[in-house]
Image (tube, rainbow, N blue to C red; front, top):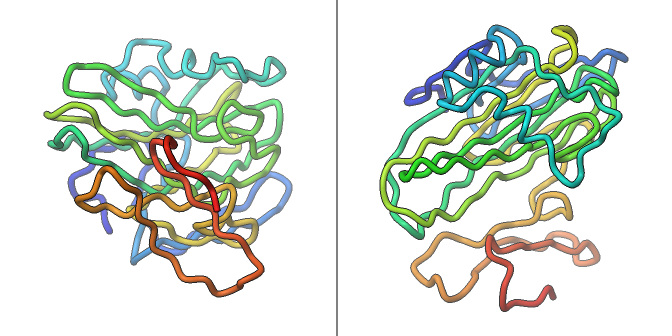
Length: 239
């Protein structure tokens, strides 16, 4: 789809098939699920402008990197980037699910992280580091790509939410990182994680039976396992 309904800051476009060339000359071909996807390039706005745009406290994105898996060898001082956001009404029990794919043009120790930000009706904000070159989030390494993943959350409040995504440079303002957002999984070549892979497990179907998990997929290679993962991994066994 296009960017209708989304607010943006920095360099954000609705893009079709896009080639990303990294610092070492690696080329990744990113394809949308449909006609276009949101393409965020990490320049065009300062991190301070992005945090203000998203209604975050100063330093919130930097602090989101500081967790138990933080890599102290990475340069995590954020400089500039871009972001996209949309507000929507939802009920408790609803689920949001967006596809994302991150490609780093830079090299370690420049972490160049990407983020998902969800603000609930009561003002509570959840910031998830999606990927970066060194971690936290999925660790791509220098000039790496995450592959296609799903950001899915089950909502526990009724009211207006704001969902946002951002990608940033760290330590400098060169060799921009990229983040692609889509309403369903697209493709990438090479090094793409298809839905149902260990890195990108299938989520349950949306239905009216919250007490059970239903999954829809087609087995094309009997010797190749399909990985599934409910949003709340309680009361089930992998088979």
